[in-house]
Image (cartoon, rainbow, N blue to C red):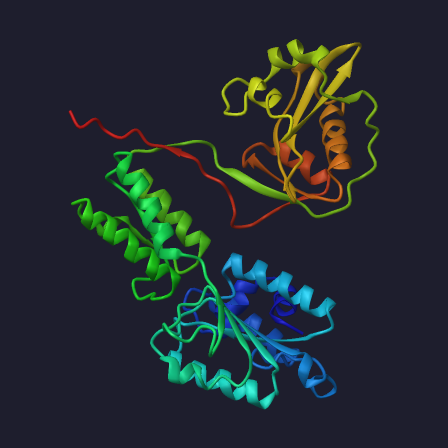
Length: 398
């Protein structure tokens, strides 16, 4: 049993379980007690998640450490790495860490004890910061170790450990410099915490350096502290934009394909052909980036499906087809042909040709008919990932 099993049984996200385990204050008392009850009932030990460890050869035991498991990037990496290791015949041990809550030296000592107790053969560490521990401490690691996106002291790579790093400081510096060179002066940044000395700390350092070199002041209102919490980031960004007089487009709900596609008769649905180009162009939505002209010029990226009735185009669907998770960009049926099933037909044909890839979409939260259509075709709402677009006109300096 792992943290995702606990999350499923408790009806919460893995991030919520992680916050409960690490005593985060932003979890309600009721939720905390419920999660702890599930943990107790299932005898879940987050520090020793090895199934039948005694029967597993020591050479196949890999420990996967994840700092801040509620980070979506690390969740994705953990899920896929665990699957690949399992398929290769390795036993995966989980050790979830959080540098906000506990002293790093204390946590490192716990990790060492765990590795030795369970005779772990190798260690893969995602995230975090061990720069202040020093090389002498890292030399105590009892097994081959690979760090991914971990801030580390200089001089140990190749001898004490291996590492795979993103160039956080140079990348953040280049991004900031591009904005400054383009004439931007009011630049906000999302940080995890003012005390974060991990990868977010490196990005924050680059942000400050570029501002200083450009002679721009550091506005503390532009430091948005998120602590890896998407909802918190969303609220802070929205509040900042509202203060600046931004205009907002309708909020959009994210939905993803989770269920098998129902059988739908797709008679009358065709892939785009140039004989229908004028009709398609005439009915296409005009006030959007992906206009009919741009879509027709990007057939290496888009499939366009047309609903044909008596030789005339009565509906269309533009959808990407080159990604692991594709997205419908525009679905439209002529008003006098609605409630005839054309929307379902177009979507069913797109889903049929999209297999085995996934599909996601964004739909206005107040567009109930569209949400019902997508739900009937196997899509489900994703909580906490709504999209909100804002437009802000920078006041003239004159």
